[in-house]
Length: 110
Length: 117
Image (cartoon, rainbow over all chains, first blue to last red; front, side, top):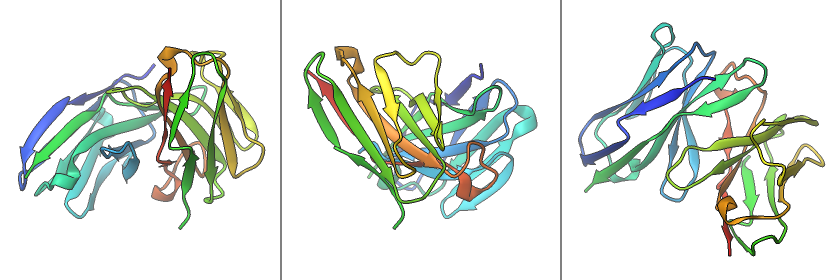
């Protein structure tokens, strides 16, 4: 099955810093999503981005499907950005199953 | 606001005592998913319903069952919880099995944290 690896696994930033999170996947996918899981466990959808680039405020994402990776950029980080960031890809072979990546745990210090 | 609701938020049960977790949605989505998430791990799909069609993951233990009596509600039954079943259980919905637009993506509930004593 598809393997989804994220890097770095852990990241500590000072408030105001920028960061780039990476998601690599082992096979072609039809779509990819980025999620933020806050410290209370709630998963929030950030981007649906099977290809191309999208921006939403301080966050932007780029997926290069042909090279099997996606990047999530966080600019001017805030303490509320802390939590775990997951990418998830959809496996369409046989059954429609989302495969979550290994996650990047981000802590933003005030 | 349309949303995904999970009850209870915290559930404590005893080893071997059946427990049911509930999920409801006001989004009128066709697909409902149940994920298990253990500490410091990614969510793992247990099963999902596309309308009334049940899709079980091959590695989901028989101890886990699900019911979807109508579009709005979906239940997760754990028949004989073991200590290894302590986890966060996440319910999610989506309009269709394969999204083609931002509005088709998964929406997650707040989760139910299960403790097994």
